[in-house]
Length: 151
Length: 417
Image (cartoon, rainbow over the protein chains, first blue to last red):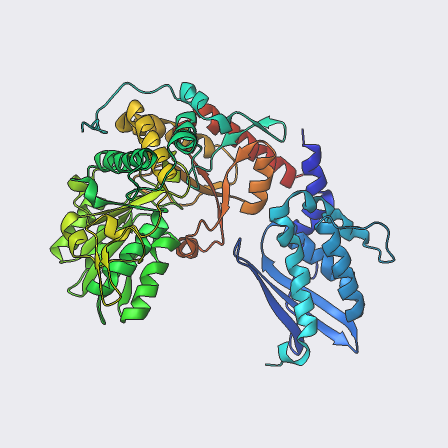
């Protein structure tokens, strides 16, 4: 029998995205990219994206990590495609509030399937697993020309 | 003072009965009884240790080595008695060879900071092994950066042993110090310490043995081992956190300059020049952790009552049983299969990251450690970022190994659905 709290953390969608991560690839240059590192567990993550004006036209990632971190990155890439940098930032702030339990009720920003990660807030040591991809994509977006590799 | 010989063999202790002495073990985690398998990180404390430290603060608390009043006399007596008991426990020739520290990390930093610069210079070599904990790597790197010395590493093989041939080849005329773990915290490997010390001494090097993972599991005798330095952490041997020790051979201690400066480590202080106390006080600046030392004394009494040889045998039986049960779990791979192992089993399960395993097992009440275990070079050797690690203590029983296996199978069920 599967423990109900555990089932809430490791929902079907998380298990699925961990087994078959979406957008799990490198985008060839020119691209924006950033690396994320969690010194606590040694997990590393790379995020790649291309912009069409201010809009994210493609976003992908490569990493090896726990199910929470892989599923979080995978879901993030699905949700961010087609959004503006500003929308991405707003989503991140909303996600962060959800994951750290500071969710202050209804908001204009729909999280949709990202809500599957809400179970993480019961595990403070695992919150960083879920937020690392979001921190990294922010840095890929903010570093504009500096992080674009053209080799 | 008569200290019981820790190697005296006694009947196999009843491990199930010993559990009763550890209050923290008797609780439910997420509605399941706690199965504590993170002893390499820290052990739980028996009631007698908790009481000894509490009683010190209730009745005898005072600063040591300075007051003439009754409480100070009592605190000093308790603190120095703990030193004497620890010296006996690890087979030191005298209590003067025991320096109290916060733990192993501080003990290693003390050697690197005091003995290091006086004995290691440009072009000299410090030999480590591929198994070391970060605390037996980084202090030597800092020393090497300051002095122009070089770090040399004896490699580990696929099974997680440090082969003596590779070790011998790296000992040379420039090797001034060998710093090696008695037991690996990441893999449980027991290093061939007597042979390593003999080879190192033949090459003219001093030897520091990091005993953090050995004491509390194995009988240790520093005189028989013939090491020059031995370091330990109380909290990994059922004593409180914040107390540990450095054993330093008397003739080395006599010539070793001070490390930290302050009160208690001096003979005279004048603005022109100060003179320093004899060892061990020379290396204990400031107010020490008296309550911790008294707790450590109580922990040693507790271990004495069981007998270290009997305890080692009983623990090994549980460890071997756990190894055989773990191999029944489909997709489980042991990380490291050393020739001689104590206390620790590192493993990986196909398709489940160690951190997920840690969370999943916690839901079954089973506490294990996941991550790099402060031994990143060991992880690099195996090409993995992390492992799951179950580590055993004197109160763990075969039933705990069974609970671990059941929890692992449940974790697989969740991930394979």
